Amino acid sequence: QVQLVESGGGSVQPGGSLRLSCAASGSILSIKAMGWYRQAPGKEREFVATITSGGSTNYADSVKGRFTISRDNSKNTVYLQMNSLKPEDTAVYYCNGVLLTTTLRTYNAWGQGTQITVSS
Image 1 (cartoon, rainbow, N blue to C red):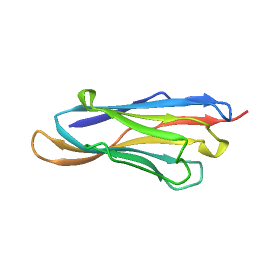
Image 2: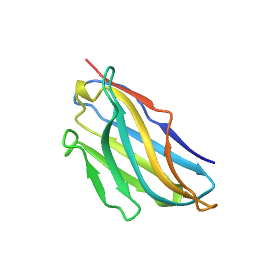
Image 3: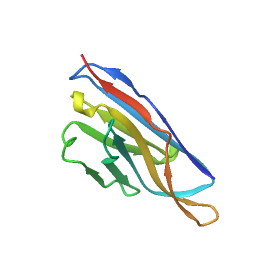
Image 4: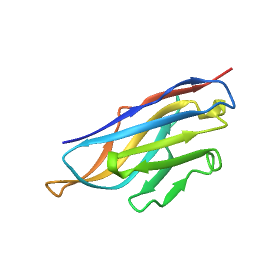
Protein backbone atom coordinates (compact mmCIF):
# COMPACT_ATOMS: atom_id res chain seq x y z
CA GLN A 1 0.00 0.00 0.00
CA VAL A 2 1.35 3.38 -1.03
CA GLN A 3 -0.03 6.85 -0.58
CA LEU A 4 0.67 10.29 -2.00
CA VAL A 5 -0.37 13.32 0.04
CA GLU A 6 -0.27 16.81 -1.45
CA SER A 7 -0.14 20.13 0.36
CA GLY A 8 0.37 23.78 -0.45
CA GLY A 9 -2.64 24.64 -2.57
CA GLY A 10 -4.59 27.85 -2.29
CA SER A 11 -5.49 31.14 -3.92
CA VAL A 12 -3.10 33.72 -5.27
CA GLN A 13 -3.22 36.83 -7.44
CA PRO A 14 -1.82 36.80 -10.97
CA GLY A 15 1.95 37.09 -10.88
CA GLY A 16 2.14 35.45 -7.49
CA SER A 17 3.85 32.26 -6.38
CA LEU A 18 2.92 29.04 -4.66
CA ARG A 19 4.78 25.89 -3.73
CA LEU A 20 3.22 22.46 -3.77
CA SER A 21 4.55 19.45 -1.91
CA CYS A 22 3.77 15.78 -2.33
CA ALA A 23 4.98 13.15 0.12
CA ALA A 24 4.95 9.46 -0.72
CA SER A 25 4.54 6.93 2.06
CA GLY A 26 4.00 3.22 2.52
CA SER A 27 5.96 0.14 1.60
CA ILE A 28 8.20 1.92 -0.90
CA LEU A 29 11.42 0.38 -2.10
CA SER A 30 12.21 3.07 -4.63
CA ILE A 31 10.60 5.87 -6.60
CA LYS A 32 11.19 5.77 -10.34
CA ALA A 33 9.60 9.10 -11.16
CA MET A 34 7.27 11.68 -9.69
CA GLY A 35 5.34 14.41 -11.34
CA TRP A 36 2.46 16.84 -11.39
CA TYR A 37 -0.64 16.98 -13.53
CA ARG A 38 -3.57 19.37 -13.46
CA GLN A 39 -7.20 19.46 -14.44
CA ALA A 40 -9.11 22.65 -15.05
CA PRO A 41 -12.93 22.77 -14.96
CA GLY A 42 -14.39 21.23 -18.09
CA LYS A 43 -10.99 20.07 -19.35
CA GLU A 44 -9.06 16.84 -19.32
CA ARG A 45 -6.18 16.20 -16.97
CA GLU A 46 -2.91 17.43 -18.46
CA PHE A 47 0.77 16.95 -17.83
CA VAL A 48 2.64 19.69 -15.97
CA ALA A 49 6.09 18.38 -14.98
CA THR A 50 8.00 15.25 -14.06
CA ILE A 51 11.29 14.40 -12.42
CA THR A 52 13.06 11.05 -12.56
CA SER A 53 14.99 9.30 -9.84
CA GLY A 54 18.15 10.62 -11.45
CA GLY A 55 16.91 14.19 -11.38
CA SER A 56 16.01 14.63 -15.05
CA THR A 57 13.10 17.00 -15.50
CA ASN A 58 10.49 17.61 -18.15
CA TYR A 59 7.92 20.39 -18.37
CA ALA A 60 4.84 21.26 -20.34
CA ASP A 61 5.48 24.16 -22.69
CA SER A 62 2.84 26.22 -20.91
CA VAL A 63 4.81 26.24 -17.63
CA LYS A 64 8.43 26.26 -18.83
CA GLY A 65 10.41 29.05 -17.24
CA ARG A 66 7.76 29.62 -14.56
CA PHE A 67 7.47 26.29 -12.72
CA THR A 68 10.28 24.25 -11.19
CA ILE A 69 9.98 20.65 -10.07
CA SER A 70 12.38 19.21 -7.52
CA ARG A 71 12.58 16.27 -5.16
CA ASP A 72 14.04 15.26 -1.83
CA ASN A 73 14.81 11.56 -2.10
CA SER A 74 15.48 11.24 1.62
CA LYS A 75 11.90 12.35 2.30
CA ASN A 76 10.23 10.70 -0.72
CA THR A 77 8.87 14.15 -1.49
CA VAL A 78 8.46 16.10 -4.69
CA TYR A 79 7.90 19.85 -4.92
CA LEU A 80 6.48 22.18 -7.53
CA GLN A 81 7.53 25.81 -7.25
CA MET A 82 5.11 27.90 -9.28
CA ASN A 83 6.06 31.50 -10.10
CA SER A 84 4.45 34.15 -12.29
CA LEU A 85 1.13 32.41 -11.95
CA LYS A 86 -1.57 33.16 -14.49
CA PRO A 87 -5.36 32.76 -14.32
CA GLU A 88 -5.06 29.90 -16.82
CA ASP A 89 -3.02 27.99 -14.23
CA THR A 90 -6.18 27.63 -12.17
CA ALA A 91 -6.87 23.91 -11.76
CA VAL A 92 -6.78 20.98 -9.40
CA TYR A 93 -3.19 19.80 -9.25
CA TYR A 94 -2.47 16.11 -8.82
CA CYS A 95 0.73 14.46 -7.73
CA ASN A 96 1.74 11.28 -9.53
CA GLY A 97 4.37 8.74 -8.64
CA VAL A 98 5.71 5.57 -10.24
CA LEU A 99 6.73 3.58 -7.20
CA LEU A 100 8.36 0.21 -6.64
CA THR A 101 7.13 -1.43 -3.45
CA THR A 102 8.95 -3.75 -1.09
CA THR A 103 6.97 -6.60 -2.65
CA LEU A 104 8.49 -5.62 -6.02
CA ARG A 105 5.20 -4.36 -7.45
CA THR A 106 5.14 -1.19 -9.49
CA TYR A 107 2.38 1.26 -8.69
CA ASN A 108 1.25 4.28 -10.65
CA ALA A 109 -0.09 6.24 -7.69
CA TRP A 110 -2.07 9.49 -7.56
CA GLY A 111 -2.63 12.01 -4.83
CA GLN A 112 -6.03 13.37 -3.91
CA GLY A 113 -5.51 16.69 -5.66
CA THR A 114 -5.14 20.23 -4.39
CA GLN A 115 -6.89 23.32 -5.74
CA ILE A 116 -4.92 26.23 -7.15
CA THR A 117 -6.88 29.38 -7.96
CA VAL A 118 -5.23 32.36 -9.65
CA SER A 119 -7.49 35.38 -9.64
CA SER A 120 -7.45 39.07 -8.95
